[in-house]
Length: 91
Image 1 (cartoon, rainbow, N blue to C red):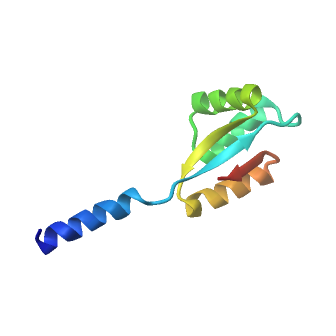
Image 2: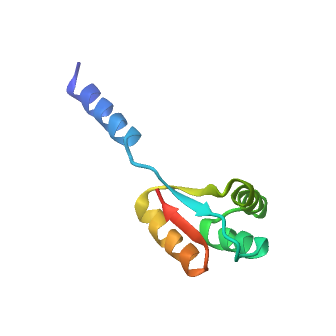
């Protein structure tokens, strides 16, 4: 195996092992559907349909993953969700 092939193989392995985290939103008895939907659109860049679906999943299942990505991207988003009064955590 040539050095070039070995480096290419190592780079591919590194790309595959990037840790993906998730923001999980939990149900509560305080926030309205409209507030949750508006917040998901503003904070997580959801479409209105996506935000509505997530809000229904949270309501009926108790939780829903609302954003996936690297921790450094998710941390400020999760902070904004918490500041908006939603119950969320990064896993």
